[in-house]
Image (cartoon, rainbow, N blue to C red; front, side):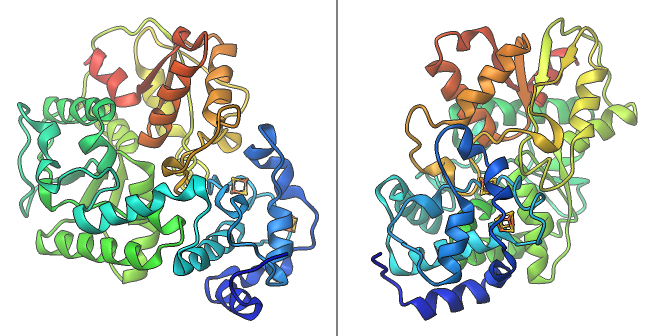
Length: 383
Ligand code: SF4
Ligand code: SF4
């Protein structure tokens, strides 16, 4: 087996990166039984762990880039192995050596864009607030109730700009005192960190933290579970503590306090997909469902893999930027699950999930039978 990095270095890097827990693995293979990859092709995290324990990782191989950090296997592991952290530590070695297998090479361009423009999409920083043109959206100033942080995809992606616009429409109608950072907003850095680029993550995080502090931000409202996760659980590594609220929690709060009235009807059968970084990683399962249940006329149904067992869309861990061949896309299977329960609408609350589901919907012959909606888009129709 050919290796690029010296064996001792791989073992040391794994240890430094929290991957020392690999040594507790006793090769039971439970992780492989729950991994979504094994529904589309053979994949073994157990084998990756085995090789890494002996410093025999092939850093040119695509295998260690497959993990979407979905969070399904760590909760099953009887030995408490930090599987995700350890997997990311292997990617750090590849990033350091600049060795990327071909499906992973788009990450290079993403890194350059994040460095130069603060977003992974290669878009101009000056255009970051263009999605809000024509809407009544203020720039955040100290003393406002909440900072709305839409995140890169909602700022630039044409499909997802609709979600940002629906969100501010709802906030305005509820009379929320909010503002955005506009061109001062940077990528949160969550996903680039999972590709092993720790330095770039730290740079993005520090820039955001500086902006939050300078603007006296106390409460941050986010649309992306990835922003939520990193602001809440990873920025604390920089000894800061902001109150972070996901839009599903905030909308639930607004409805509960009577600040939002649901006057319209939504007479459709809807199923809800739990994004990995909202559900498994952060335990937010109830609020999105409670919002949907409160909508008059809406019939909520569950797919076969729901709540803690939700089936990953395939976009986490930086996979959103990597190529996944046809026939191996998790989102195709998820659309099929939505169709199987007769859902006219597949609702979720994550930009990566929406991106992948929209792609799969177009690729599948009968994909048209279901629409893909963010919960804000559904709510906007009934207020
Ligand atoms: S579930 Fe845990 S102990 Fe079992 S093979 Fe996977 S990492 Fe090792
Ligand atoms: S975190 Fe998810 S994708 Fe990664 S190895 Fe575990 S089950 Fe598979």
